[in-house]
Length: 73
Image (tube, rainbow, N blue to C red; front, side, top):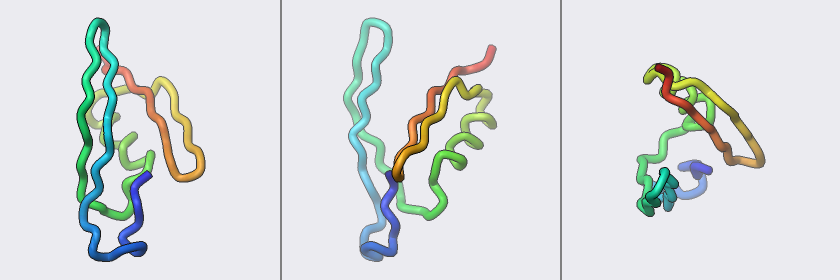
């Protein structure tokens, strides 16, 4: 869930832990981003589709979302 800048206008960035599970390998890293209003599921779906991904599943719940994407052939 991306925080709103309205909560604390001094907070410019947010960092989230990210766990990636690949066949035979797991990666623990982070995702840092400048807080910009409008960065919800629809925003990321548009980016994914523009990059050639198709949506396998989508779940939106109480301020967070989960997208499962697959790169088209």
